[in-house]
Image (cartoon, rainbow, N blue to C red; front, side, top):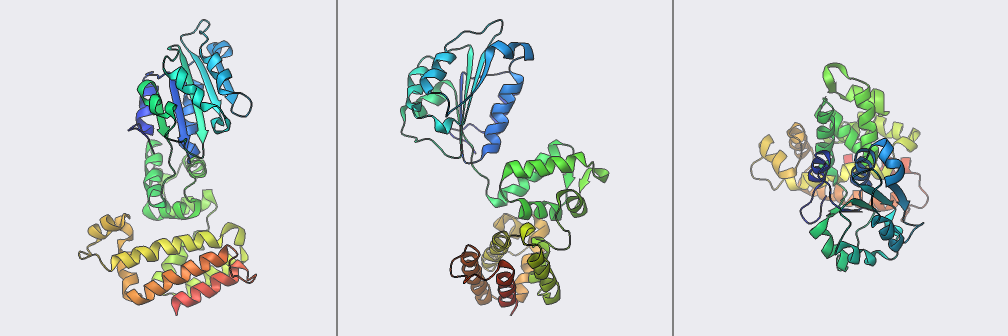
Length: 337
């Protein structure tokens, strides 16, 4: 999530203590952290009255770096700081000019670049100069196994707890797009769940996930080789394809069965050690014990191969135009038999 040892929490901590740097260069694939930092600066450094003359929000496809730096060298009017936020900075073609400004940045200016969706070339001179006088931050996308911890901590900061099943439901349904995740978590916070505990029922009522027909329940059915339940869920998915994309279902199943393959090689299969080795919540350790009793190592390898094949088909490769619902039906049959 960070570059040069600077992470999101430390940046936000400094900002809240009014410890400001003259330049913030925020870059990377995950826009959520970039937006959080830049929005905080935009809304909190200056008062409403000071913003009128001392704050500018610019866009990378409408200005040049030279024009931005000319504005950055101006002095504030009846304010301690000038704040300049450059959104869509990835569209600036002359960022190398920033290197000269960094040699002597204006101490009364807070200059923020929001360079989303990619990193800048680390060989550029200004990248090496930035950490000496300002903040160079890389906002990386979370891996899927990091999302549950993000969910738990985000809700904890809002005074809420969430049970493991509800956490996994949200992770499976929302994926790694943190802006989307946060939007749904805010809905849950507004719902004021009983005893401040977010359960699967609360998620179902507020996020639109059917508590009986979802990827979590399908996986549970496959773990237990519950053919009837699995087929019911497949039929529901087939009838509601928009809310249950095949590619997401395959991702959930692939993550589990690749972990199951690792499970066979863990010498100490105590729940605590399994959770540690696989990077999962201890609540789900028992699922691997159950699955290992239903699927041997050879079958698990076959399932992983099947999932790769059907992942390609879900993306139109050698699918022969077969609908996703039918592909899922075939896949689940082959897993169970």
